[in-house]
Length: 80
Image 1 (tube, rainbow, N blue to C red):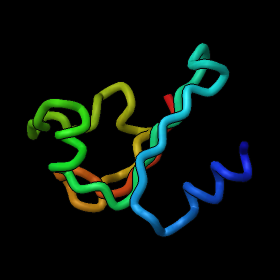
Image 2 (image 1 turned 90 degrees about the vertical axis):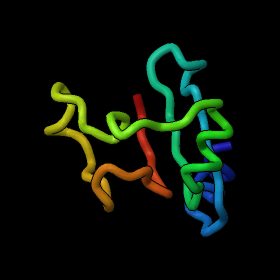
Image 3 (image 1 turned 180 degrees about the horizontal axis):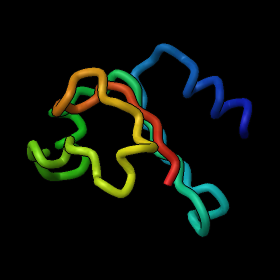
């Protein structure tokens, strides 16, 4: 399963990947590649606001900088 997952995530194809590692008990991996903001908004059922793209004070030192500030990143990966 890990090999297939790596192949998909490392491919150049547009994708949305969600994996609740260990059934989500400890971490969740979320990533996407080449997904437009409008598509993501349809998937989650709501529109983003400008405040959604501001770094949270508690995590700003660890956060990856957005390529275009205050805009939805077309590709992203996070484990939380």
